[in-house]
Image (cartoon, rainbow, N blue to C red):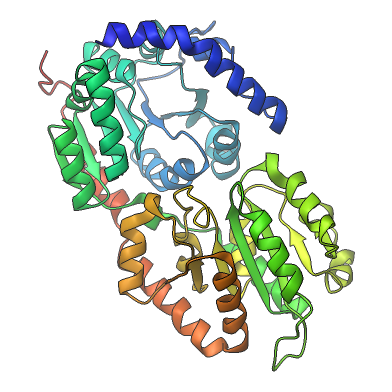
Length: 442
């Protein structure tokens, strides 16, 4: 079945490359579609001892993986860090700039899941261990690692009921392909007991619960404090609408236009909204929506490095966050956060970062990617979930008028995050117990 999967993958590869090329053209990003490393080919030999290979597909997984990567480095490992998307690659360069510069971390594109590509990649770097973050499990990657007797860990693993259904369908088509793949994992460290149960049912033989790495992310203090200082200077009650996905900006912008000129008492000044689309390819689209509703706005990229622009900001109604990696600053600058990806069926985005610094947070109804975290935060009264953007905006404005209530929610969120840290330590302990020559069924 794996052979059939590989043949099908080769047949559909041109369509995959076309889709990647379309996204690359739309975003003006470098996807390295036909880079030699995508096929496991390297002109020069690896220059060091066997690294730990960490795969973090995109931005969210990169941020979650950073504490684990730093833990590995502290123990003397070198890290080979791979990505699928240019945004993930750029985020890693931003968060791990020093480690990449001094050679402790080596960045590469992950090879396509052709067996030859994966085998060449593993032969070139000879990693002592592979760590896949959250859900990036590929049949040929796992098989090639097993053949070469390299342990594979799925860390901070999440596996929803929807993923379980999709896995069962694929197994029906490919004769148990994914069951064989999950059975090839050396160890699975799941986020929750529910994830662990579903992964065990999918075929993973050694499953335990470690928690969610996203709770261990430490936001840059300088960025958060910079946002707080900026907020004090502009002296405006501020709402950040963060990580919006397709279809959400079009729902929020008309609501902003209706509310933006209403003064917030007791300050008696209108609110400032910060709109931050999740992906750079949608920055211009969001700007077009703001233009069409005649809102006074400025792009953050135009003013972020200009201290003289502060007076101009005081006249604006919206700031369009059109840069990457600055959510910690915007969260620090806000009185309330609405986290997108949850008002259309995208599964939600990471709200934990905002809660970690004490900002009261609102999410929409579509949160399957963070289901257990949302349930836990709601039980702790550390989060408010609403049905639509209008309810979210009304609640955020209410918090601006009742800062004591907002503070209570924010502090509950901060305490809730503090009680869930520790996934990095538990994963590190699990790694320390691994014997690279453990019997994996060879």
